[in-house]
Image (cartoon, rainbow, N blue to C red):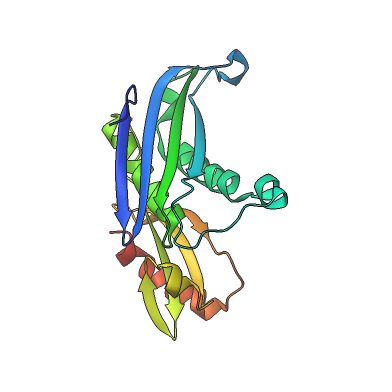
Length: 195
């Protein structure tokens, strides 16, 4: 594990590889962040410079306008705010740090799975372990945990985070427009994908 981390994990999903570290619960860095009745969850999401097979030369506009890490961190934070038993740790904070080591698709789902394992490693109580999967349609075939090549077909695709034991969907993301029948097909396969 990482020095000082309360829990950590590496999760592989095909060629995608993500590292997660959890610190806490601990005293809040800023007193203004402390909530009297529950813990505060913070999440940081980063991608290693060597993580993608195609190197993209950063420009000043892409460096300042890349919302993907902030958006991914927000989704991960909100996902775990809904499943962690935060009321057991008032006036404290739990930090989740995500580092993408290799990105070959389904990286947000791999990050959520890595964070789940790191939270379990830290011994933090949850309503249940969550599992995340990308489900998509490629040439009318249902695929799970799509890689970059499969995602490039622009078929219908959703990301689902669920509590496998109960089948309850915690987070659902549809990044592009799709027909209702395609959404239903993807959702029908979400339970299998997250078990």
